[in-house]
Amino acid sequence: MPASPSAYGPFSLAGQVAVVTGAGKGIGRACALMLAQAGADIALCARTQADLDAVAQEIRAMGRRAITVAGDVSLESTLDTLVARTVAELGKLTLLINNAGGAGPNNPQKMGGEAFSAVLTWNVTPAYMLIQKAVPLMQAAGGGAVVNISSVAARYAQKRFSAYGAAKAALNQMTRNLAHDFAPTVRINAIEPGTILTEALAPYLNAERTERMLSNTPMGRMGQPEDIAGAAVFLLSPAASWITGKILGVDGGVEAPNF
Image (cartoon, rainbow, N blue to C red; front, side, top):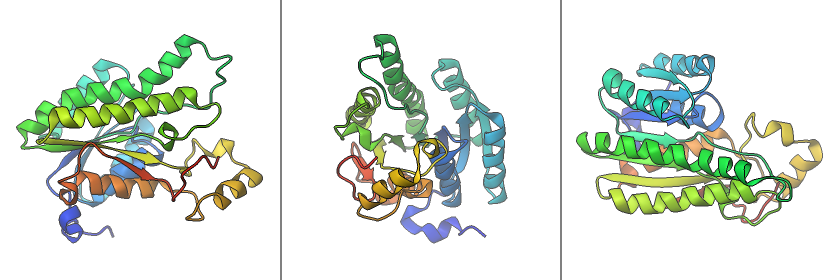
């Protein structure tokens, strides 16, 4: 039985309506479920309807409302539908998690400019457009908060991550700048996850690599999606009402690549 939103105290999201992108699996799913547990109603967006339906069913079992919008967030039409349906069916939009994004390693001697640009665009532009569309609705509702899901790749210097690292560094700086644009009514922060055990990571793991990663992580374990979700609830909650334009590392204490 999930805890009552009132048990969350200053971390409660009761009465809030959140949009979560990339919500079908991994970090996005964990964030959507924990926001619902804290009292928010959720608009879920991802490409795969079946994944969204499964998450929505879990949210509704908590007694919260959930809607699903299947689509590609790099298309403005998807974002327009997501925002419009959120307000029409859930009444308002006050919280946003931009989680959709990602990329694998790249070979800088082989990746062309078009492919490099695509990584930058995918990790930055949908978040920018969705914030742009959401902020007026948040302001109309009396204020709101945004969390962008970045990566420790934004601050690590490591081989074969020039595209992804540059994209997430751009997302971080965009977060800082937009926080100034929209303060004080809308707060905008980002989270830099470290190594999180998700379906996306699993294909890259073997026993030797896993052991090396664990030995190089002060907390002695890989992160779970719920570690990021807990940080997101904090940053979106009244407990973080004096925090904006900040990048929070949730990385097990790692300060250099451990992969």
